[in-house]
Length: 321
Image 1 (cartoon, rainbow, N blue to C red):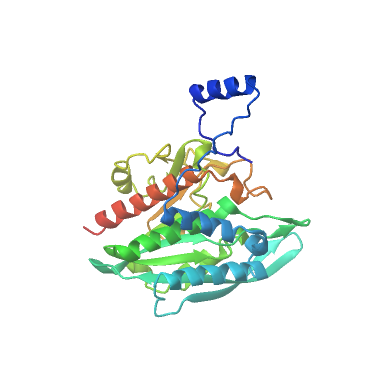
Image 2 (cartoon, rainbow, N blue to C red):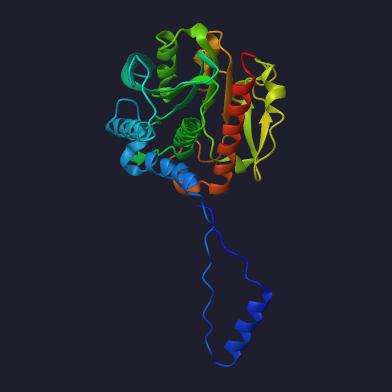
């Protein structure tokens, strides 16, 4: 657990307290004041806290906890007035996934919202984040605060901003199920898209956006495959202590250092669609029961989300020109 934020105590106050103590008088210590968090950012934090709470039971695909998480995300989209596409709000799917004991059949559900664009109305940016995690194992709940309640919260905050200030492209907001079970929700979406694949200008995928303080970066992968995007994104200035970094997508990045197929952008890439993945490096709580809300540093998460939103705006304004 990270230490609580404290305001520094000025030396003058310390001297007064020491003098009063010497005289036998107890000085009342000043109460530290917590940093003020804007209401919109508080909602960002609340979304992670709620989605990673114990009652979500790790949000495994097909579990009661996953169903509760889905109901929460749907309620947030509807509260923001984000409409469903013509195919409907929910996209159920089934898939068989290999396991040590044989094939396991999962039933999952993707969640979709639509925000119409103002310029390229028949071209779509598909913004994605998976809401599932690995559930419960050996009696321990894997809450997945960073992986990937954080990415869902970043996506919901972007959706709120786009509802207030419409994008140039039409946008599909998609919360994927089944990422932890082999990207099965994203694979189904690409196989049965709600809009023609030819109309998708970009997939922007958020997966683990809250722990950027680990190395000070929110990483962008996909500019090696889509080099035209890099000069657009390189112009974005750091936000607070967090800056953008580029990589984990070249032939020299091997094994777990290569993120090209590491999350839900993978099926889009394999389908020949442009993609950008935004996320943080692995940390000691990755895929552990300790990936909890109280490990998140609010300032770093807020900065990462602001950078993610700035990246969307820059790409939205530059594509299809």
